[in-house]
Amino acid sequence: MYDVVVIGGGPAGRALARACAHEGLDTAIVDRHPHRVYTATYGAWADELPPHTPTKTQSTTVRAYAREEHLIPRTYVVLDNARLHELPEQVEILKAPTEARYTFNATGARKGRAEQTAVGTVIESDNTDTTLMDWRNGDTFLYTVPLGGNRTLVEETCLARRPGMPLSELRRRLHTRLEPGPQEERVRFPLDAPRAPHAFGAAAGFIHPATGYSVATSLTLAPKVAQAIKAGENPEHVIWSRKARTVHALRRFGLESLLRMDADQTRDFFELFFRLDPELQRAYLSGREDVKGTTAAMTALFRAAPLRLKAKLIL
Image (cartoon, rainbow, N blue to C red; front, side):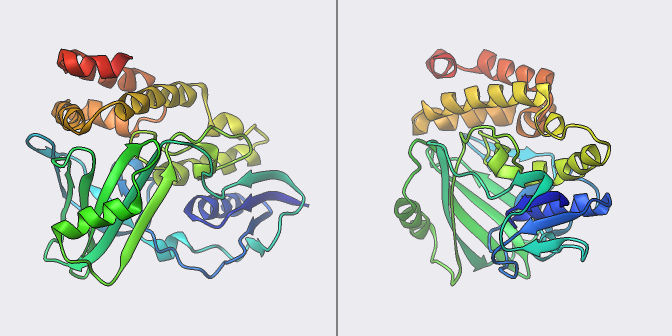
């Protein structure tokens, strides 16, 4: 019998399998397509990631547009998919689940009604160090990030909608901005998937309801979960601590507010958000257990909002 079996060979599942093997746990991963490469682009704030996380590119300049231009004082990176896919030889690859002391579902989020959707294309570009998030279109935003080698991903993204904006509409909007490149990237996943026991990554509810990010959280928590298992502690207390549950509930409240806004109100909201103190921005975007910082960011947003926007934030 294995110590740990991880079901799902995505970045979260493989991160957990690697971490468990590193702790000397007898580990297996269920991956029916173990040689399939990752085609998605995984971006993250550099300060969210654990040391030695493999990255492919980094943006030292991050610009955001809502009503005005804002510089975000954080480094943004694109992760190295090939290295995220690697497993140590101690991890056995299985085709089906088997008995283990701990089994984790890491197959990705499946449920939920509010979705993030996006369509992107890769183009040639001289942009080598700048990530752009442009909200001037209101209900969607343009996301551009350098991939290295004079290649840039340009993506039309609907951050949150219930149900998600159709990919065909996002593709149409993207193609009115630029000529499509030979490679297309499509995104669709739920933002309001429930927290789940005996799971890890997006399947456990790690997706940030206001950003759609989950990979950085998975990479950060994987070693801590493995250490808890080795120490004979309950890994669920690491995966969903009391503070993490509280912050998640606050973020879900924020998601519901965002879903009530029209395009004009969405621009106003992000203009207010990008005017926040950078530490408050970081607390809301990245402070998974930062109850005080998350509450302070939400309070500051509410106080700064005009009356017409306050109504969307509290109903």
